[in-house]
Amino acid sequence: MTNSKELKKRMTDMKAIVYEKYGLPDVLELKDVENPTPLDDEVLVEVHAASVNAYDWHFLTADIFLIRLMGGGLLRPKKKTLGADIAGRVVAVGKNITRFHLGDEVFGKAKGGSGGFAEYVCAPEKSLELKPTNVSFEEASTASIAALTALQGLRDEGQIQSGNKVLIHGASGGVGTFAVQIAKSFEAEVTAVCSSRNVDIARSIGANHVIDYTHEDFTLNGELYDLILVANGNRSIDEYKQALKQNGICVLAGGGGGSILELIVGMFQEWWISKTENKKIGSFLANINQKDLAFMKELLASGKVKPVIDQRYSLNNTADALRYLGEGHAQGKIVITMEHASKTYPR
Ligand SMILES: NC(=O)c1ccc[n+]([C@@H]2O[C@H](COP(=O)([O-])OP(=O)(O)OC[C@H]3O[C@@H](n4cnc5c(N)ncnc54)[C@H](OP(=O)(O)O)[C@@H]3O)[C@@H](O)[C@H]2O)c1
Image 1 (tube, rainbow, N blue to C red):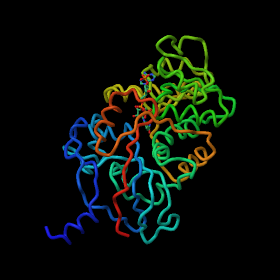
Image 2 (image 1 turned 90 degrees about the horizontal axis):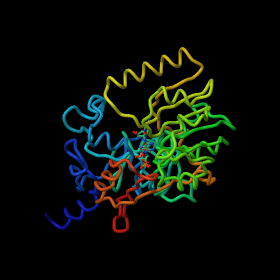
Image 3 (image 1 turned 60 degrees about the vertical axis):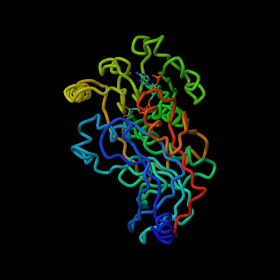
Image 4 (image 1 turned 120 degrees about the vertical axis):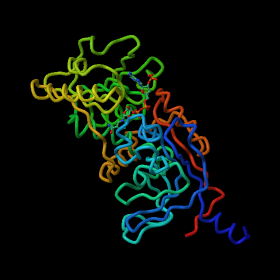
């Protein structure tokens, strides 16, 4: 390769995490790939941090078969990149972009929910928001999927009101740590359910009451709740129902798992309870949109919500980050931090 070709390659290539087949994190490779180019309604973000979600795990492993049917690729991954949640700096804008300018610090969701585990990624304007200046890139990178799941679960699905008694099951993970703080910002009385090692974290983020599930069963202690958000938990739908007040709502965001048959039976149970009793139980899928990113931006800027970061990894250790996520015991969020010191993007 001639010197000028080498130089051109250095200017147009970036490091990214790539995978060619579904599997455990060992299938992930750090590769040089071409820098993405933004379409008219996209910006190019120099990624400073990206956070890891169960969403990435599902696309890596295809542990949920539906992933293969819903655009993941039947036999092999279609997109070959991972990383939905990003924070970074705008380095190029498409011609229809009006809200962002070169140099803006932004956070949100990468185009198509993948490609964020890389030095650069494109994102549509509507999936991004300006990063509050008092919040780090690492913190901002955690505030999309997990935060909006907590927000939409509590506010939209759960109809949270000031003074409500709210229980967060699985309060110590990515979704749970946001849910406790967001519920507090709505002036709810919050009970966090977690294991012994996470009791202090739950208190530190503002839970009024903490139930250590290794010592106490919240379904048997006689307390009833206006709203239960299940971030992680493995109780039956009947048990959640028993812990609800009349007119109470239980929102199932995560946890559980199980076969397609169990899923269908569960959906039928949810429908039946909602039809026949003054209680509502239902699952939902979060939707990452600009309006709610702006809502989160205000919560972050005001300090009402402070992301809890458990572990930080470099881009070339992304597989370790995914391994840690797969163990299922993260205390808050897991973040990939990029290094950009030696790289200049051609502008
Ligand atoms: N519906 C949606 O749109 C949506 C969006 C995002 C995520 N999700 C789902 O939400 C779930 C949670 O996501 P996440 O990001 O919070 O995961 P996470 O960060 O990996 O959750 C790990 C945490 O969950 C706790 N935990 C595990 N089992 C528990 C149990 N039985 N009871 C109480 N706590 C338990 C762990 O604490 P210990 O180590 O102490 O057990 C750990 O702190 C996942 O199933 C994910 O797929 C759904």
